[in-house]
Length: 119
Image (cartoon, rainbow, N blue to C red; front, side, top):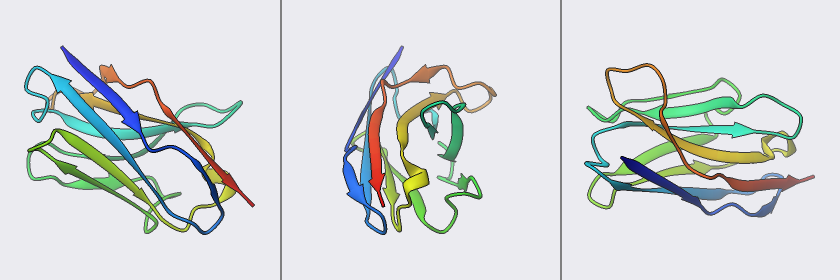
């Protein structure tokens, strides 16, 4: 079983930066692909980006490409989301998620952390 806990959400002005953290604990927490998702009020949850267990390769949604960066520290079992040049449309609850590398579905989810970007 894997437990995920996000932190770092805050109120920030447009153009600002914020770094979210996702701490993983439980069984072999570094052996999972991990991802960030977000959900804005009244909207469906959307994929933000992910980082693989093997090789640490990353991929991002077009809406955040060039502004957001995902990294992970397998020694502390923590994943990060560095968000720069924030826009009001980035306002959402941000969730971290994890999956076994050879599976398609993300089975493990955190509780979420609120990011609000004011204009």
